[in-house]
Image (cartoon, rainbow, N blue to C red; front, side):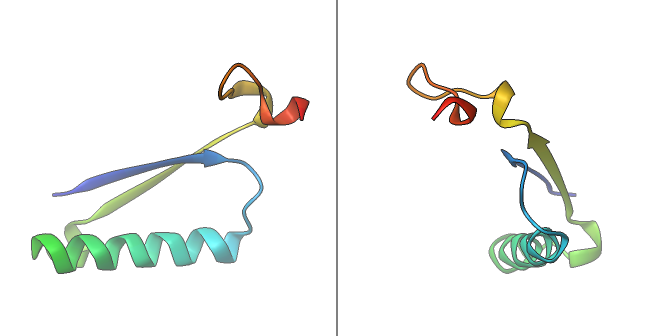
Length: 61
């Protein structure tokens, strides 16, 4: 039962998230031979205010 967590900044459309779930599921099934109904994809969205890289938040750029 593969579980994949995708962490990303907020701002993607529902269609983009739907496509992401579909394509991640496809990648997992093709590489692990797990049936699609056993693959779980969790999207965790973060506010740009709650994330920083190299000491800078994207919200501050």
